[in-house]
Every structure is written in C-alpha cells, then in structure tokens.
Length: 100
Image (cartoon, rainbow, N blue to C red; front, side, top):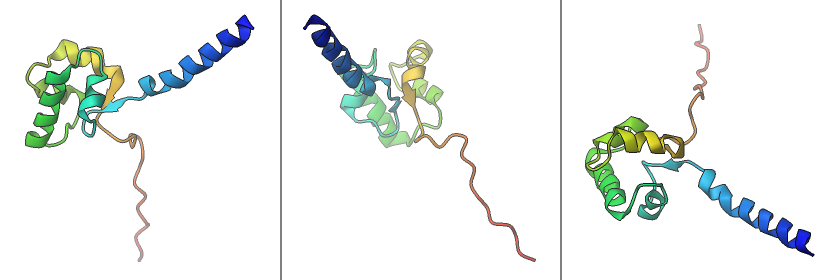
C-alpha cells in the first residue's frame, strides 16, 4: 500500500513537472508565464511585455537586458528557461532547383 502511494506521488510529480521544463518564449509569453520564471515578478513581467509592444520582438535572449530592471546576471540565470523562437533553429528552407 505504501509503495502504491509512493508510486502515485512520483507519477503525479512527473506529470506536473513537465510544464516547468518547457522554455518560455519571451516574445509570446503572457504575464503569468513570465512570472513563472525565477526572479521575474509582476513588475518585471509587465516591463517585458511593455518593451515588446514598444520595440517589437526580441531577436536574442541577450536582448532581454534592454528591459529596464533586467541585467546580465538575470539573463544568465534565465538563459536555460527562456527562448525567443518557436523551435525552428537548424531548420533549412527548401529551395527548388532552378530550371534551365
């Protein structure tokens, strides 16, 4: 009985931890998604969203340093948890061969 409860607990933790391993896209994240990042509270999340609205999409994770209140140490701490793209890195565009 104890083993069954322990197993269920581990399965539950595994299921709910899946969302924490997904990188947050700082170009599309909601206020709540940004606040889920360690060190980003309501004020910094709002500043990120305001920056996006005013300046456009972030080109790189390092561009996050341009947001007021976010410095290099914060970016370094968040680097593994954030992204600016939709997972298209390394994908090459297929171009048809030119006809003669």
